[in-house]
Each structure stands twice: as structure tokens, then as C-alpha cells.
Length: 249
Image 1 (tube, rainbow, N blue to C red):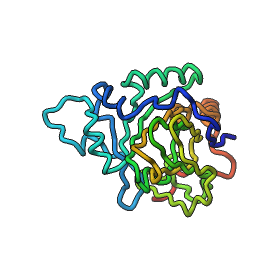
Image 2 (cartoon, rainbow, N blue to C red; image 1 turned 135 degrees about the horizontal axis):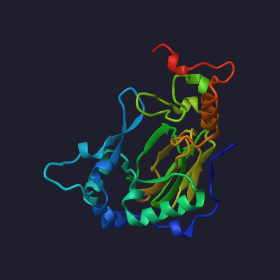
Image 3 (tube, helix red, strand yellow; image 1 turned 180 degrees about the vertical axis):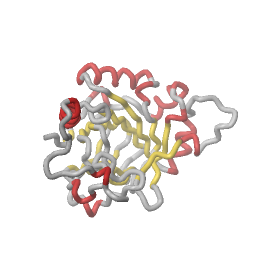
Image 4 (cartoon, rainbow, N blue to C red; image 1 turned 135 degrees about the vertical axis):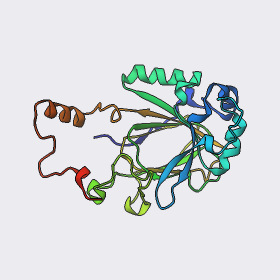
């Protein structure tokens, strides 16, 4: 079984690998409409609001402006989604990991101002996540997945997002409680809840999130089993289970 872990030593090449100075240098390569700002949904969980809804877009080109990122940090964490597809130094990192793992890879950049008591509330992701701190610091707490039976209608890989809420009370004590500093790496398997803050950060926090998209592309044993049973005309449900999609709303 997969378990989260933090590398015991920092990675030299990751120290200062992408800082705010690099954003200023490469912002013109990144389309602003891919960016988002972490936002809490009223009565729900976490979501990424579109960056373009928070800046003036009339009469402008498609390029990100570094000063706009700095202005929006007061509203929450700024995410440069899929930055590895557009910013050359980050594309090199993506390509190296792709060659190593032979699995679909994407890379986001997350930027959070210092002193934030909540950068991202408890949530889960569909991807295996590798977080690499490149500037400042960020506290991470990683928890064991709650039993799926506690909330059978919820997708265990998207808990705490959209209209779903996930509280720390239902998670218990964290498996990992650590502050990532430049060059340090944290691995979290898909489905493991985590939350972040920058209370102790000395400056703006920048970290890279590398996602390994096995579940998104059905590259797992559960999907292989499901596909094989469908092809043979067999029932795909496990014994003593039911289809949650048929639950009454």
C-alpha cells in the first residue's frame, strides 16, 4: 500500500528552482486564463476561482503579468495550473519525471503569501502528489483517508472540494505534520487528505506540485479489473457492494 513520506534530505537542484524572480522572467509565457485563486465555497469546500474573473481582462493580451499575481495574493493562494506545459524550466522537470516514471505528469505552481493561517483546507486529490518547496516555507499536515463508508455518496478522491466539506475533526491526528523548506520534498498518494498554511513562513511561499495521473487515465488495477469484467459481460460490482450512483439524492 502507498503511504505519504517526506524525504529526509533536501534536493540540491530543487533549492530556488522556481522563485518569484523566475515568475517575473517567464510570466509572459503563461496564459493567464489557466490560473486560479484558492477560494472557499459558501457552505462547501475548496475550489479554484478563475484568475481572469479577478483581474481586468478587457483589451489585454493572453499573457500572465507577475504584478497581477502579487496583487491577488491577498485573496488567497494563486495557482498556475499546468505551468509545466508553458514555462520552459518547469517543462524540463516534467519531462524528466515523465521519462523516469513513464506515467502521465503535470506540474502546477502554488504561490501563497506569508502569515496565512489557511492556505488550503483539508481536501483530497485524484493524483499522487509530489510537492517540492522552492521559496519560503509551507506547513503541511497529511492525514489517513477517512473510511469511504462514512460518506458513501462522496468521491474519496475529491473530498473537501466544491460542495463537499471535510473537517479536521473527522480526520484525527495527522500522519505527517511538517514545514517544507526550499529543496524539501513531500509525497502524498491520491486520496490522502492534506491541509496547508504559511503561518511560520519568512517570505512568500512558492512550491511546485507534480501530479502523477494514474487514476485520471484509468491506469490502475481497479480500472483494469472493471474493463476486463465489462468485456466479458460480467458484473463489475464487488460482492456485497452497491452502485452509489443509484442512491436517491
